[in-house]
Length: 68
Image (cartoon, rainbow, N blue to C red; front, top):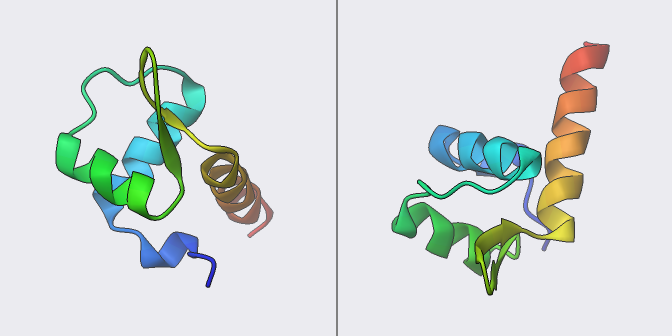
């Protein structure tokens, strides 16, 4: 079942928004693990990065906020 923006904690939402802008070296390891488990982040050679699914979730949430 796909995860929704509202299913995430505030810290997870903030982390995804920051990761959407670029590298986030200060990402808390517990949050990173949860985001990876949800399929919203992936481990990369240069660190944890946002996944395609994570990016889509952030963009949809930002567009929904703009439209409301």
